[in-house]
Amino acid sequence: MATIVIVEDDELVQEIVARALESAAHTVIPVADGLDAIDCLWENDPDLIILDCALPGKGGLPILQELRASPRFQAIPVLMLTARRSDWHARLAMDAGASAYLRKPFKVEDLLRIVGELLQKADAVQPIVDRSGAEAEPLIDIDYLSTLRSSLGLHDTHVLLGMMADTLDQSIQTLVQALEAGDRARVAQEAHALAGAATTVGAARLAEMCRTIERAPDDRSDRSNQLAATGRATREAIESVLSEDAAVSLSDPLS
Image 1: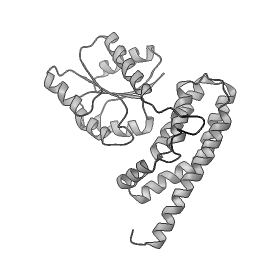
Image 2 (image 1 turned 30 degrees about the vertical axis):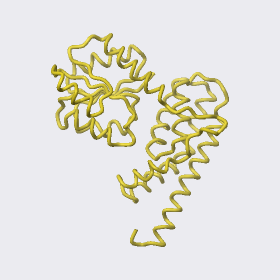
Image 3 (image 1 turned 135 degrees about the vertical axis):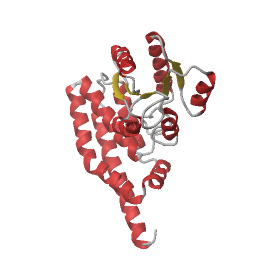
Image 4 (image 1 turned 90 degrees about the vertical axis):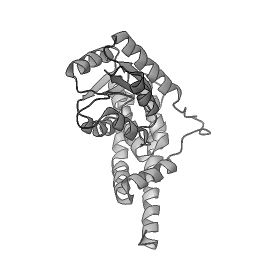
């Protein structure tokens, strides 16, 4: 089960794609305007994006280029779905970072095959958390955090980190309750949401743990204690980052 955003202004194509993907147990979120696409992607943290080339507001290629320039979306597979027939357009899309290219009109079985292949490849390159800790992701990805500061500025980065620190305990508790209740749908939903929030602030270890839970919501192994411990450690790491940045700002008012 994957969350897939389709950015397509043709309502009929939207409907065909949505029905096909929902029949394969995926969640589909449609967007009709290019200007709304980036906001929708940030809000929903999809596993895959289907993107039309010709869109009102903002074209598919500029959106694709913006996605590939963002640490948040660099690794997410993007399928370009378009009526353009020339090989030149296909090469242009692939050079801009598209993962695959499908021309309209298309066969539903081709769409499902390509989507399945892209999701399988994306899962294959996901880093595996070594539960012994030897290969675990860092609590906070410092390189990503540096990029975030450069993109958003120090103030907005702190606002984002502060929101995560304030809400993290409750989010962890909600997911733990779903795990202990054996509520498969709720586990997948809460794990997906928390993975997206963690990814946004560079909380790499928590994000990977939540993705692992989302991919196997039926796993009845005891993950609650590990999740709670990682959540506490992540919150403390975020608070440490905020404190260190505050100390630097006080010592250097012009920074």
